[in-house]
Amino acid sequence: GVAHLEGLGATISQLAANLPQHLVVEWISTYHKTTDKEIEQILHIAPNVVEVDLSRTKVTDEGLKHIGKLARLTHLNLSRTQITDKGIAHLSGLRSLEYLNLYGTGVSDAVLPMLAKHRRLKSLYTWKTKITSEGLSKLRKALPDAKLVLETDAKANRYDNLEIPDDKFDF
Image (cartoon, rainbow, N blue to C red; front, side, top):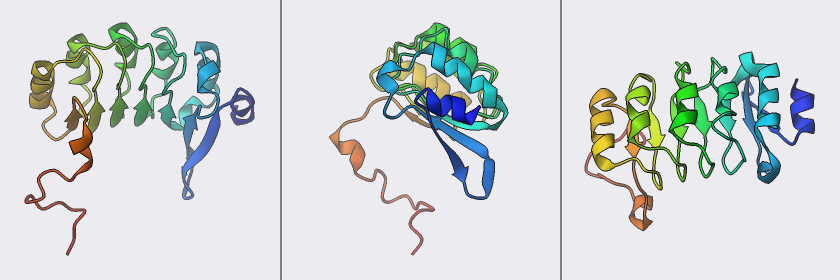
């Protein structure tokens, strides 16, 4: 399974040294030639896959049917792919999903009711999509604790709300 996927250009790593059964699958250097056919091969190691990075690959809505079978998946990066609302529908069974990057895809507000059912979702990135701020406001009511990002700009690199204490700043 793993060797076969690596032969197809995937980079597979352990999430952490103490979690050898939790695998991260990425197509970093071969994204430009990675299609649904290669992505389907991920099913050979499906029980162990927790993170998948398909950014800039040639994955289609049809290819997301395979990703939708990765029951333990927590992180999915679909940025800069041709994915549309139809493809996102295949992800409805991913009950562990915490992070979803849809930057630069063709998704719209139509996917938001389905995403609202993903109660574990902590981060959703939707800039350069057809998702509207109105749509994201409704989603925020369903997922009040999630970080929902509609757009980014130069100011996004600075720390927002410094007056609000954050766990990261322990003085």
